[in-house]
Image (tube, rainbow, N blue to C red; front, top):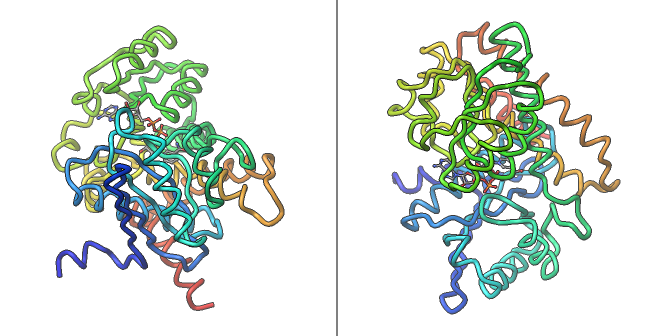
Length: 347
Ligand code: NAI
């Protein structure tokens, strides 16, 4: 029963296994009340199959809420390929995955995520149609749009918590210097923020030290950095009962999916006076971009930018409601998303 409860009402969970070509993939389709499932594919060397499954389930559920909050006509889905993207992601493995996607018959649209690059998305798109964020026939890598939305969300959080959205002179800790984290750093640096960074990739931190004059700290200690704002841009679960007591920043606003180890951790943050920007609200830029590509009227960059510019407004509404009702911000965000899904179901 505990196992079934963990499936959290997912509509479908698909397993693709091809030992010869080195594929173990999970496609989780959480909810399609608002439209077909949409969400990227993560390639990550989870220690166990259960860990990969849990990741896929939590990520796909997050996509359902993300889409509902951003008012996109898509449902939540996500895939995890259990592999090390640096050593185990071969063309044969991606071939096998493309066949799995094709067999899903249009129920699931995918694209980039951690470990799956623009080149990989292009490779998949040549073999199966339901891949977005590609160079040919698509809008390209969604990460810069995610980073822009996150930057605007950081400013909204600063405005709410400090009365000014200026980043100049503030100390901002960024965890993860990948596609999104790096682009966020560029924007923060150009507006005068002092950056504190951490990444498991030594080359990336060295580059950040040089490009931004960033202070480099260990990956284990970045949560506890003396900062005004903490921006998680690596993997999930960074805010937990273990880490929250060490957090010095009064604001958490970053792009990583599933930043909270457990839903209740947001209440813990609230009790400590930390403003938390719900992850699936602030990081919706990438989804907005890839979903626009699939719109019947075709991709319109200006329309995408208008839509992304609404992210701070949405966050402000959530912050204000949370404060007025003395509830955690993620409870408010989830309630809004669930209401929209219920309305769609009723209609
Ligand atoms: P990426 O793979 O380009 O970058 C992730 C970075 O985090 C890498 O540099 C990696 O070395 C680093 N990292 C991994 N574990 C770490 C740790 N323990 N401590 C510090 N650094 C660590 O991924 P991307 O695309 O930048 O995504 C980052 C996060 O944002 C992910 O959680 C992703 O799901 C989320 N996200 C990304 C979107 C996009 O458009 N790319 C859209 C929405 C969410």
